[in-house]
Length: 277
Ligand SMILES: NC(=O)c1ccc[n+]([C@@H]2O[C@H](COP(=O)([O-])OP(=O)(O)OC[C@H]3O[C@@H](n4cnc5c(N)ncnc54)[C@H](OP(=O)(O)O)[C@@H]3O)[C@@H](O)[C@H]2O)c1
Image (cartoon, rainbow, N blue to C red; front, side, top):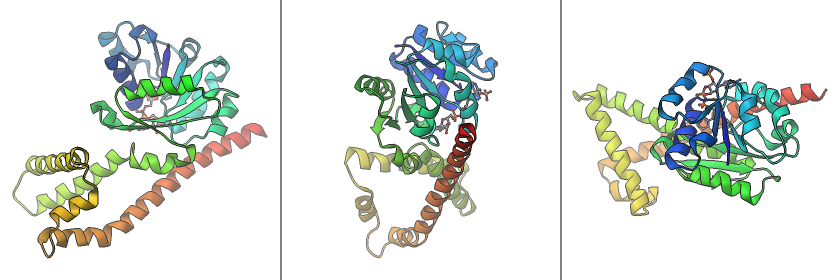
């Protein structure tokens, strides 16, 4: 199986490294392009047999599965400039939560396509990859994408209408978690003589331990709260504040990400209506 990656940024480079580390794709079966060619030089040093392509068309022409790993704002141009090189039997994989199958299929008619959303935590082999497939996708293609992504993450297949909330819960979540804890670090800093590093270490060890309780002992979140927040105790005082003030923040967060996603999708819709005029 020959695999193409267009866009060697955060996601494209992670996919390349993970496929090669796991051995799911051979170096010589991987085809990669990027707008800024200099970025691809590093590949030669570690993986000399990987095919570095001068343009996106070469990636498309040489591959069975093509991962489009560019930002949503660049996707139009890349899809438009490569569509004439795509042929039946290939599988298009959009690493983009703001595109939908009717749009992908208007560019690549009748082609089997998927929308695949990895997470940056895949770098440490602990992540969920979301995958949605269009009707043209065959069992074999679905199995193929699953094998590729399963090698470093846990694949969850979802319908395309759930992509929004599911990306908030997976690929966006490391950013949300890190934002919350960076605020906690700042507040703890202002209330003690501890160093930032000491505070950081206390928190990350506790986050890891909490995750392990959930995973190893199958403890749901509310049970952990119950175990720690004894009635009338200090933790309970804190959890009451979270219960009363945090839900509104979460509501606003989900609303804002939804609206931001919808604006990006509207841009796409505008492009398609112009194209069809
Ligand atoms: N980052 C995440 O955690 C994450 C998680 C899940 C999904 N995603 C999705 O993954 C996609 C890629 O995101 P990213 O974070 O990897 O973005 P990124 O780091 O900005 O990488 C995008 C890459 O695309 C390249 N590119 C742009 N236009 C191109 C063109 N015409 N031809 C070839 N390459 C081109 C850029 O090249 P240059 O070197 O010239 O800039 C850059 O290397 C997005 O749809 C994003 O929403 C991201």
